[in-house]
Image 1 (cartoon, rainbow, N blue to C red):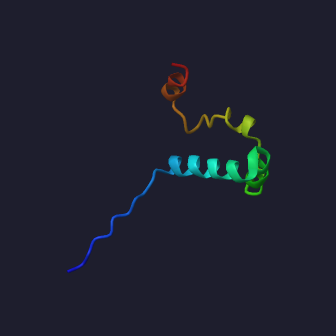
Image 2 (cartoon, rainbow, N blue to C red):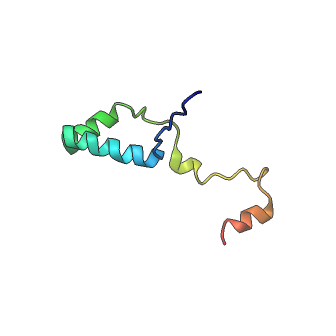
Image 3 (cartoon, rainbow, N blue to C red):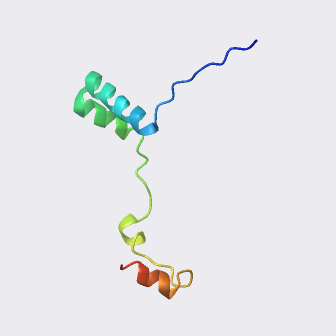
Length: 69
C-alpha cells in the first residue's frame, strides 16, 4: 500500500509577499531593494514607444475602434 503525500502549495503571489517580508525583516528596505536590483537585467527597447505602436496590417478596423470603448 502506498501513502499519498499531500503537498501544501501556496499561490505565487503569496510566496512573493512572504519572500519580500522575509527580505525586509532581515535586510531592511534599502537592503531589499539592493538585493532585488541584482536580478534586474535593465530591460531592453523603448517600452513607452512600443506600447503605443499598432501593427495596422494585423489589426482590423473593428479591433482598432474597440480599443477606444
